[in-house]
Length: 188
Ligand code: HEC
Image (tube, rainbow, N blue to C red; front, top):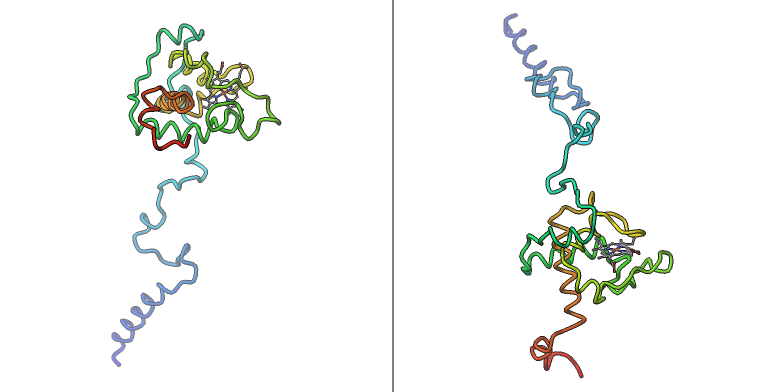
């Protein structure tokens, strides 16, 4: 073997062995080091979890400035259509955020009642006659023992729950028209 070949073989075996380092995270030789030691931030690691700039507002969470429930009833209108998609969404959210206290049909018989004071029924004439904006006001600010949902539910989510509350009311107070349609389905 000519000496020059020996050098080439030695160099090649070094290149091949370089790939056999046991610690993949810390190789002895890195091809394209600027890709290997990326400056990109890793999710959930220090540096990427900086608090948002002061005053930052998540999309759908505008500051709420209405101070009275009557004013809310007059000013605010439900921007969402009472479509089946909206009501399904409202149902899912109600079952996550409200059902524990208010119960499946909003009758105040949720699973934590007993340990927690019973809320008034959402099947009442009062809530039936409430404007959507008045209910929005209660969900947004809370009311005595009921917590505020302003930071947990976006405005759209709050409005979709309100559509679903109307569905719950209708389910317990069917119109004669509803009853006619249901004939044959409901056992006497
Ligand atoms: C931790 C229990 C709890 C949860 C969860 C809860 N509420 Fe309430 N809610 C109450 C209580 C208690 C009251 C009665 C407050 C009062 O005495 O004024 C109330 C009152 C209300 C009222 C007004 C009823 C009235 O007659 O004045 C509405 C509307 C309402 N809740 C809707 C909701 C919706 C919608 C959710 C889910 C986003 C929800 N609540 C989640 C406990 C709860």
